[in-house]
Length: 185
Image (cartoon, rainbow, N blue to C red; front, top):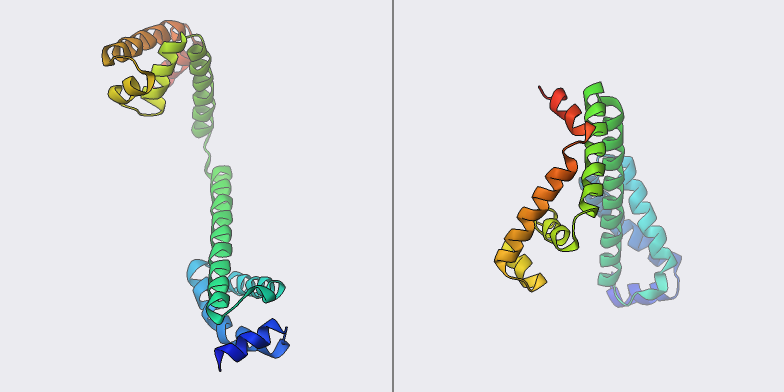
């Protein structure tokens, strides 16, 4: 089929031209979507949605390559969304069914410890807290911290050591840490 005729018909909202495009690309797009999704039915639904979007934007295209690209990109993006959704569902189901009593207790303890550490860090002097965050949470090297804060590397090392010492003092009497120590004996 002549592409110029094809597109000019498409611009004039010709149902026959749209049907020809549908017939030309439907099987290819279904195959493409099936490779990205586990379900053939999901793949067919995605392709159908892509053609619905194409129909609603039918006056926006200037050539057949633009239509083809639009269809493939639309199908790919929708397949990725569906795959992500299925992954979230599997993760949630696994979390609901595979969580043992020990896992639940560990998650509870971990949450409590993180809260205590967070509260203790808020009590640190700002300089120590910044260096500690940059070093342990942002994974920056001493030189990078030094450059960003415009302080010497020795000051970074001193602040880090001071922060760890202060944290250990702030966290020494926390019952959750004692619980952790008895739990892992």
